[in-house]
Image (cartoon, rainbow, N blue to C red):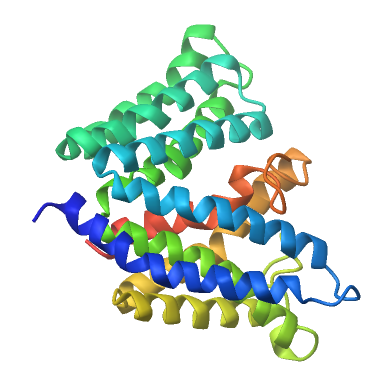
Length: 287
């Protein structure tokens, strides 16, 4: 049985679970009293999830081509947001956008080429725009930012294609981990040792949120029959570190959100920051 067929079956098994979670979440946000802080934002977030979940699972029903389109589409939008935050020059943005399409295509059609040879070519590609422009003032900084963007976004998103059924589990677990982190932070993060922030980069992220994310991700992976300690560690690592990583970039860039077009979340990077790190870790830890 091919990896694409296995991934499609995993997506099919996940549909009732996702439908149940969305249904329960819809009822919960519908009955929230008006005095609850963030009620309007939670409702916007639920509507966004109700639209995004079918797109994510639907891509796996379409096989390798569907996951390629999903990864490439996410990548093109995400690198555009990253390039805007990083102040990337046009040439640097072009390299990022080309990789956002090319790498998922290679993962779909010729995955054996995604090895150290591809890494070497990406490093050279990151430097080419600054080299051709003769940028002796900020060329190294440009190259470093582009190389980071390539690893953080296009390389990570190839995991949606190469991980197969594990990619389904990672995507859904990260999504529920975000909900679990919010619930844990709200219920346990008001006082005591669990209320301490993880990092000054994001004071609202507390150890209580980590506990909530840990419980939610473990339960989701167990329900999908995909639980293993390495995979759980990769997902939880993404949930914890992904948001802090993007917060670091946004603080240096002086922006609050990567974008404003995704209701309840901001930009696409604000939604998939944890997924990107989780996919990278999963590709390392689950092989």
